[in-house]
Image (cartoon, rainbow, N blue to C red; front, top):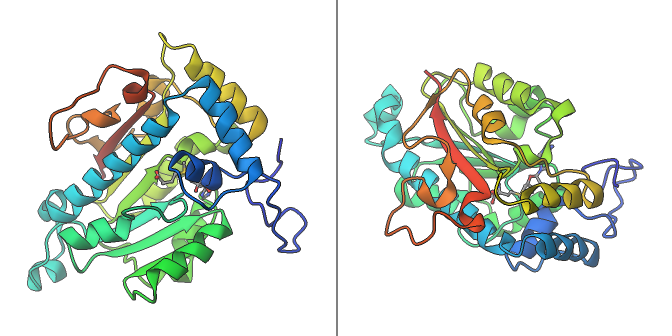
Length: 289
Ligand code: SAM
């Protein structure tokens, strides 16, 4: 089991070890991306053997991300927009801090946010330096978007990072995105404490968007997948709904609450809400009062 989340930092040399799987690259396999190595594919294949629905689940996760970003950028935040934003006619949330953003893929946060709110600023943060290497290439010097290498287990460092501060004004509402990342934090790393530290630091009217693996009482493979991921990747906690609800404590969950991904404000007919694929991840959006 790898003893560090970053493939670069084990010996401090900055060397890259493609033989150590990472969450970003395993997820890239699930999304049929090309930025992965044999070690990542082995973990992905072992996971797919346990839960063949994982590729569909990754797509449901991306689809919810798109709906949430579009929704917040266009509408929900209009109730909390700043005087500055009012003045120039913008509406909706115009700052997104995408923590554990993953490797660039089809339709990234900044593309979706800017379609709904052209002035939106987006900072991507990920522990895997491959994310910033690839991210900077696709951003092509976009002044409203940045990619930062950082560890969400050190929230104070992320909040103080010059690359984050350059674009995000924490005196105004921001959407903090924790999409598919908290299950990569072990219990002893205190994911709830990390959410609380972030919530304490952001302005009232900010939003938290969380999706997470969810333990299913009627699907023993949800526990089996946790065993595979913890042993082969070192992370991958599959939490109960009650544990996930705790992440939102002190925040106001927006309707429809913490739900299977396809059920969060669907934009068309929901074709699947009862399968393991639909239910293995749940997600919600909450507002800091
Ligand atoms: N947020 C994207 C999404 O939902 O489509 C990507 C999710 S991917 C499953 C999880 C990401 O979290 C990976 O890119 C991984 O590198 C990142 N990650 C894991 N632990 C992290 C940490 N401690 N700090 C920052 N990023 C982390």
